[in-house]
Image (cartoon, rainbow, N blue to C red):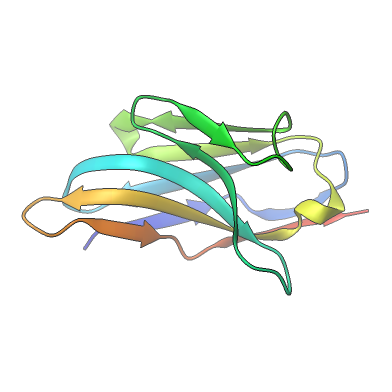
Length: 120
């Protein structure tokens, strides 16, 4: 069974930093674009940042310049380094990936989510 597992959320004061991790596990042939999305209370899920297998990155405007996404293909893992955090960054952060398992159909996977709370 292929799955994504996130870690690294928590409580931090405004201006602080956190690092999220997401690892894909299972019988995987290939992983394409991976990314981080977030959903704040009462709001829809929105894009945070994405990274291709070749390392090309994209960022949503609210996080550009403060967050950095990176990827370790050997470990099937992506990271999100979050700096200068603001209370409005408070949300559940979800990992997303396009995955081709061995001998099975292509999947778009979501992690279970990790809560980031930024206090003012």
